[in-house]
Each structure stands twice: as C-alpha cells, then as structure tokens.
Length: 400
Image (cartoon, rainbow, N blue to C red; front, top):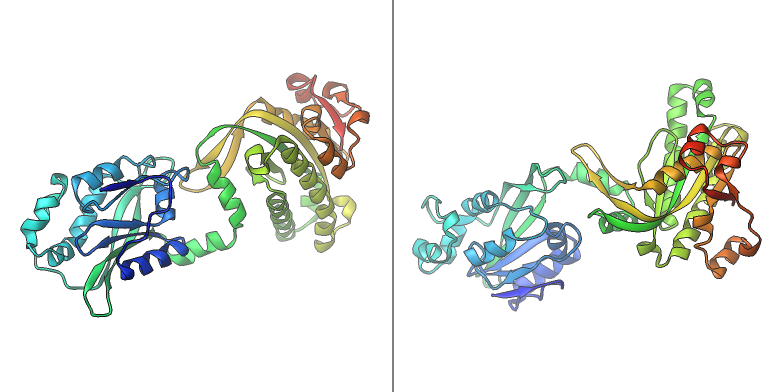
C-alpha cells in the first residue's frame, strides 16, 4: 500500500483503468477505481477534496484492497468525516457478488482480505451484471446529519472482454435537474472562493455594506410583482458585480448588499481594499441602469454604502438543510453596518482603516489622493444614527 498525500493520484498502469480515471478527473466527478483484484488504484481530486472539507486532498491508500482494514482505516480517518463503517458495509453488500466473481479463490479469498467489520454479507450467487446503482448514507453537511449519496458501479472491460476493474461514480441523491439548476445559476469563480472559506477561520478582508434608500415608498408605489422583479434585478446585478471584483457575496437581507474582499483572494490588503471600492462604484452605476429597466426614475433608486476593514474577521460557511452562505463575525462587521446607515443621500463612506490599506498605485487607480484625504469621526456626522454614536463614535470616515 502506498499513501498518496496532497497531490493528484497517479494514473493506474492498466490502460483501460487509466483512460477511465483521466475522464472522471477531467469531468470533476466524484469517482474511484479499483482493479480486477479490488485494489484501490485511483480517486479523483474532487472526491478527495470533498472528503477533506474542501481544504485538502485526503490521503489515499493506493494498492490496498478496497474493503480491507488497512484501506478502511485510512478512509475512515479522513478529515471530512463523511464516511462511516455503516456506509462501507452498505457499499460492500451491494458489490460483494462482483468481488467474489473476480476472486480466483471465491468467497474464501474475499474473506481473507475483508475488514472483519464488514464480514456479515450473505453468501449469494456470483454477480455477473455490468452496472448497478445503490445509495449509501454519508455526513456531507455542516450539521452532521446523514444524507444519501447515489453510487453507480460500472464494470470496466478491456477490448478482449476481460474485467479490468470497477469504477464507482458518486453524486448527491438529488437529481441532475436539481443539481443543474443550482450550479447553472451560479458563477464557478465564486464557488471556488466559497470553498476556500469552507472551514471558518480568522481572515482579513475589506467589508462592503450597501442598502437601497427609500425602499418602503418604492414598494408601495410598485405592484408586488413589479417590486419583486426590481429586487431580483438589483440582487443579481449586485452579486455579479461583487464576483467580478473578486469578492465573496455575504448574506442577503431585504434590499441590502453585503460582500467581503479577502486578502487571501486579492493577493494583498491594498488589492482587497481597491476591489471593495471598485465594486461600490460599479454598484452605484448599476443602480441607475436597473431603474431604467424597471421603468423608474434613476433618482428613485439610490444606494448608500459603508466600507470598512476587518483585520481579524472570523469568516466561514454556514450550511443548513435549506441554504448555504458565507458569513463573517467581528466588531468590524457591526461597525461597517453603522457606517452604511450614516451614509444617507446616496453617499459612500469608507473608514480610515480601509483607505489607508491602499498603496500608492491602487490609490492612483481610484483617483484618491492619500495625502489629501480628510476624515471625520462617525459621531460628528450630521447623519450619524443613534446606533453609530453608541457603537462606533470614533470611527474615522471619508467620502469615496
């Protein structure tokens, strides 16, 4: 047995298995391949990432008999904790007939390498089918609740008809009509960024809060359907702008926009701060276009913004049975909300902590003269809210 860590699994030496493995990996499938002796010879990057909580390619016991104790001990120790002994027991029961059919020594040979925790299968007839689908329970959500994963097992044969091995292709139990709708509406770049924060941790980021002013009068003027269409255009446009700027979309609340521009994605604090300001500028411009498309006066669609810097935000995914989103916790998040609430009249207020993250090159690109910026304490603004005076009175801000 060879343990492969942190790298794409080497291709099997058998050309039939290598061809299948390459195809599965290029497709981004959850797939694994065993040879005709039921030795594990390949797993795709995507299934290994999923078992590593999207943070690592989990170690792989290449060459071990797939249902042996040495293989199961490695796989049950994966950081993602998806698999249980019950899941492997279910999987083995489904394909035990194939394992026996491939073993020259029949049942006794299989028993010789089988993990004792699985040795409760019925000794039925040898199975000569070529494909089958079965379901196994795994823990693939943050709540640790078992969900069903569909496994399709396929016999792989050479040109001479010999059994070269078996492939296992997995997918969530949801049908492709559901999965396709969810993935098709998204942006792959954002999915990648969200994966990077799957595990909550301290991260630095620029924070953007935006909100639509006068939303209540607008909702009363428009029909319910008309206001829904307007809101959908606004949210879709905002999300796309944040993604184009390199950010991560935060939670949606009413007509509000929350986004984070992480240093780890942007490459530097200055780049993250610049991306945040550029996203705000694009959102402000898009508001007028959305108004026109919604048969509204651009003066009726005005957004206010609060931009801030979070040095030690706790950022991560929140996944429930009904939704998945990225959220951040930290004092700076509350402060960003307070800054935004004070930016009435369509202003964009940025904190000194954010602006002074900009290096000269990024400041010049934004048209900001760093040496001439003048700041004012949030509590001293005529538009300061009671909450701003209470929670963030000394935060220095400027118009951007």
